[in-house]
Length: 555
Image (tube, rainbow, N blue to C red; front, side):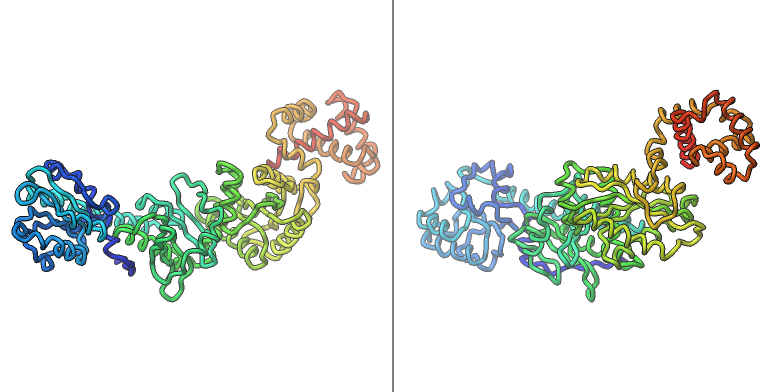
């Protein structure tokens, strides 16, 4: 059985008010319109809820009237005692009645002037029927409206509980819980931590709201609560999230009105679902990590209307990127890249958690997310480029301290070019992925930048360009079409010869060949390619094509 709390909200009468018809709404009902009603006093108070409707003809009303009641009368009981009108008015006001409606014509042609004047002072709605009216039809119509509203509210509550129960069986994420609450309430839903930082939210279009621009300031103006409460000043429902012994967040729902029972219970059920999800998580940092991962995806995929919207969201969620220098990063985990299925996905998640713990424990300004099989995507930020380099080095030191289970190679860390605006994050992350891929041909080092992988980094950036592929094929086609054994032998010879500056002595030493054997191979290459491999520009073109071929083989 799922247990949920019913919080102690103030102003229960106001809470129920939204389920009840108002004086203004009652004036529009067909049986009421049939009596040609006119509101004499109370335009300002016509939105008060009506709890019930009574027909009263006796001057002594105190025993029959409760707060929110609407009284219908023909004035029969006051026909011979018109002086009793004012005491009746005072009694209705004291009991909290919503209004007094008088049918004209039978016993009175109008309300006494002093009654109208007093009603203006007390705030009681006065109305008259200028035609004969069937009070019983009015009572039936109003009571039917009240019962229908309560039935609808009960149906909403039942539907809400069923939806949350169904979602709970799937092990929902924070975002899924908040989205369900939003769909039930038709209101934006926000989750903040106890430090007044926005952790997650659900809106109709998933874009930042203006309130997020200064979230912390707005949050600090709301009173801290130990139990669910509605803040009249801001029109916001605030519900603590967590266990009674350990609250860790607050659910914030801008309603703009005192919550109904269904809205209260939906907010409570949402808070309980979030608390349960956290209890089931082995690591309580998971929520923050999910927030970081979501931000990485949003920034990389450019899922924002404007740069200001994205910066607003990052700032509200505790990652101010305004005025920061940024760089995309990539981390390859060789042992996980080849894995498949749920086991590989679980291990990749473990690796992401491991990186997030490094970031947390060492206070590094890094956001981490998933990029693909065996790949993590990083976004690094800092006040200056020197600060970024320091973060690169610290992160590399921590990554080198441990290899992931099943890996025969160490993780490879690479970073793209630094940027000044978030719309460059996608490009920098792509560069980082290219750097990581091209690092296989570079000398080992803690982390790699574009300049570290030299021509291979450049070729890696262009490896999908058909023009580079055509160029490589044109330069080397005669060699590539040889039998595999001869092709590989001559390509290795040509690569070594060109990479050593066409120094025949060094090439022979590297290949463990005699000079005559090397000369014979080079001559065969020259004849097959029909090219002068000693001519500098030809040699450069061939060397470029051979290194492009290496990149194609590794991508």
